[in-house]
Amino acid sequence: MGILFAAPPGIVTAETLRRGVARGFPAALSVQLGSLIGDATYCLLALAGVAVLVQNPITQRVLGIVSVLFLIYLTISGIRAELKSAPTSNPLMVLPTASRSAFLTGMFLSLTNPWAIGFWLSLGGTLASDGAMESGNTMAVFFTSFFGACLVYAFVMAFLVGVTRRAIPPKIGKWISISCSLVIGLVAIGVGIQVIQLFL
Image 1 (spheres, rainbow, N blue to C red):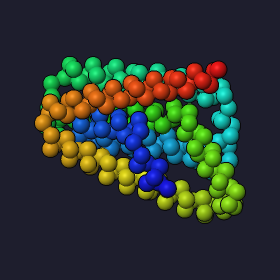
Image 2 (cartoon, helix red, strand yellow):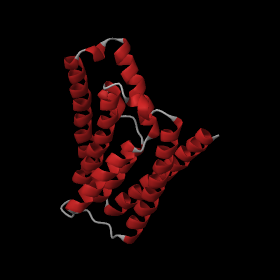
Image 3 (tube, rainbow, N blue to C red):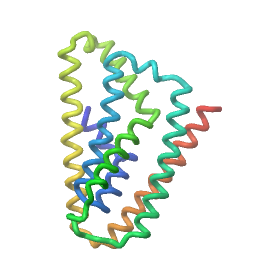
């Protein structure tokens, strides 16, 4: 389940590819690890049976608006940064601040995803109906194995992006990064439409 949850293409994958192509393995891994923090937060709420407290229209609308604004910011800043920066293929030119920024971006992407709450709430309900949440040991095994698989995927994904960065010309990497920013912008439009539907 952890692999199936982490592997499908999405906004985190696009940001991982964008950061990784521009900054290398450390930045790509930082995005992935940051997103796991947000997912783990909602998972713990679901396993504790309190995720329902944040599953309400007001919370979804607020998170939706914040998510759209953040995605728009990522789109604009990503394109602007690539157009202004000179392409480089040196994997050593990765500042610690870049990895820190990538980590916080990944975490914020998952924490501001209003539909992540619904996923973990439904999963928590499924586990509860099966009686899995009655045992602390069972919950611990589920959490550890689920996010252990996600962690393995995060390293594999970041490694593949880092290898790709070294294998392609810097100019192509630059345009890949810009393309990922445009994809994030399209996602922002899609999320914005869904948020408008919440208000309607």
